[in-house]
Length: 69
Length: 260
Image: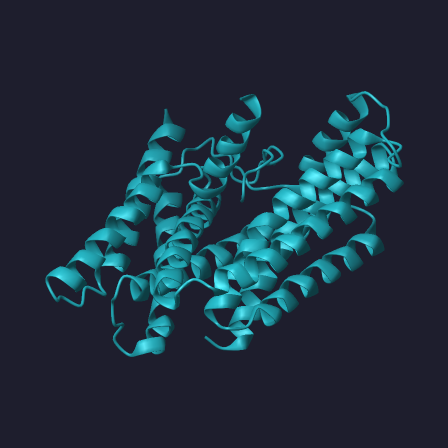
């Protein structure tokens, strides 16, 4: 059981990293992009670059706030 | 993407990880037992080669659109992690990575650890320290080799970039017999973060069904735009960096399993 937990934690750290919100944001942004493209027929190429700016900005703001405390 | 960009990106990512792995192997070898440290290194390189050999063809079987979506999403997550840390380091909110300091800490820990061997390995601690260091640092490079290579239809070319980096770092490491503290690791990590994020956005977008304006030429805009975002953001953050900023202070050795 301990081995399985360590294995799962390793892969969580490997894939998700320091800020789980960034990984979650990527999934949400990709889902929204695919939804716009396939359901609304909108070529939403601009959404992912915009999401990168927002996700990076928010993640850095949290890190800076934590470092300043 | 040209073959040159593919090789260069893999080379940079692999050089950064190889420098960190070299520090750990040097610490295990000099403070414990060279033979066991090199056995651990060889075992880890073999495990990484098997991982690439197994994953490469397996990933190649995934339909192209789905491959780009999954691989692009993972590269984007990895890229944002690298870029975030690089920006925090460049602006002084996170200590710069310092190989000399990491080496000193690894040596102290290795000297304090208990001895003992197993089978043909005379020093189990030196073996496992080297194995873990090389395997964990190399795992993400193996992933980058497989994903970049498959997306561009050239795993061997990507592997060439990785092998070139390992050979270069090993050669310099043997020549100087010390941690490669002068390698501009933090700048290289910034560059890798930019490339992974840009290609992650491009491939994930394609996988989600987007048609990029200008097709592949969109990368010529994405890469400099993300570089500008990273460098500009770091410059802005530096302005508000606290007076007792950790900039320039040596960082702790990276925790095992962390990527950057």
